[in-house]
Amino acid sequence: MMNMVKGKKILISMGGTYEPIDSVRGITNKSSGKMGLELAKEAYIRGADLTLVVANVNVDIPSVFETIPVETSKEMNDVILSIIGDYDIFISAAAVSDFEFKKQDDKKIDSSSSLFLNLKPTTKIIRQIKKINPDIFLVGFKAEFNISRDEIIKCAKKQIVDAGTDLVIANDISRDGCHFGSDNNEVLIVDDEVLSVPLASKKQIAKTIFDVISQKL
Image (cartoon, rainbow, N blue to C red; front, top):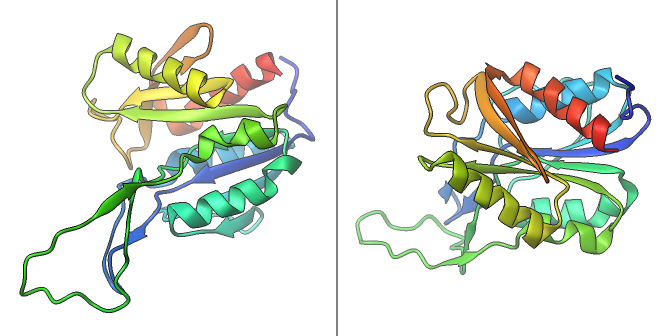
């Protein structure tokens, strides 16, 4: 198979964002960054010009990679939208919070009283990418929990319609060996067709994803 990724400018987002409640507390998710890192390694091996936007991860990022650290969904949004016009491919592997706090307290909230958290939806980064860079090859991830294969495909197809993604990597994180932080995964690669990738290492899945991207470019 021809390596269509060589020399392409690729941006990969990875890790889980953190939304502060006060000066010491916040909400996040269990994303480890393992899938994003394997995608980065595969892109590097294939000769891509690579940049990573990295939120909270439980993996060590090799110093050879150009990285932009972020914490919140807003920081990730601002960074990605400011540079996305320069890239050929964007792989949105980060687990971006769906909610942020309407008002963040700049002090530590007293723990002796009840607390009501007022949340608002975060900006959907992936829905803005094609508006800025219509020609970019856009890869989205869709993690669902305990739903049927047909429902997962339906969710992936909805993202394609809503965001213009060229490819969606969808999976059910309730399945054995497929949860956030695991070394393996079982995914569906969705566009006009659906490719089922049975349980495999995230390294192998990253290779398969890039094989598909190369076919589509």
